[in-house]
Length: 374
Image 1 (tube, rainbow, N blue to C red):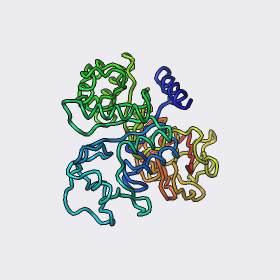
Image 2 (image 1 turned 180 degrees about the vertical axis):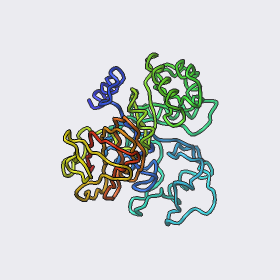
Image 3 (image 1 turned 90 degrees about the vertical axis):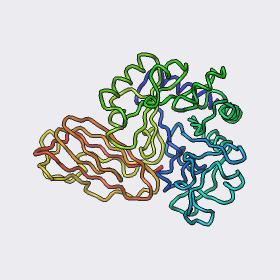
Image 4 (image 1 turned 180 degrees about the horizontal axis):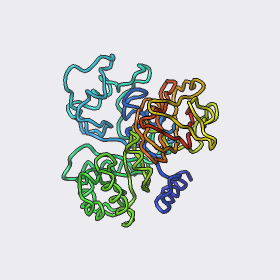
């Protein structure tokens, strides 16, 4: 029943393209750059579920004895420690270690030693995704012209998740090999900046990943409109406001992220209600209820923000002028006429929030802030 409900949700998102129904993908799980949990760890899956993500992305490589393991990089050094917690002293390729060695000798990095865990196999990772009801994007990080390992991944995904509950994603090389093997009942995702629009379009049942960072605004808007006109679902990655703003202006079905909080859909606990213009300390509030700031003047809350162990901070605003905004651990600029929103994950902190005028006069017409503990 759960699979059927989720399938209907995905189809509805595809047809309507409404922002309220867009799907957020936890990129390599919720790990926040290997701080709150290990990258691609089982813990990062459960955190993604708690935060309200509907999907997750992971990466697959081969161990020395041919086992499918979950790891993004070709080496262990960025994401792993020795099992005793010490730093790896030499470059260690994943492909040079057997599954037993990977399991016994290394742990995934995380700030809290208590949540540092072992490198999962693909089966372990997919089993946890199924338990948490997460639509799964699987990226093979191995070149296999025969397609044998791609078939192994698909067979395993069908067994654990079931057909229709996952996506295979690549720069189009793996996608082309998969289709050349006559496998046409698996959804794919192609990365546009690594291939051509036509090649992704010709794959059939293929999501188009359109980069919000590599394409400028005109190119990005063009490719999104072109994909939509050709009935292709669209995906983009964002961690910063400048990229998330592009996504919010367009019709994107899937949003992949390492640091953004997913749209609020009933998850978590709203702390201290929500903050609006009346709750901020500022030099001038107009009769119409807007905030007016001169250059370098700031707006802050009239009370300290609550400490959040794991949650999200959500901002919506409408302003005229040029502002610098601090939100959580991010600082970004907003220019004249923006009606915008931003939302970031928080880990064990009292989140920062401030608006500073960068123009001679800044008018803030609307300002809403919500803080959620997941």
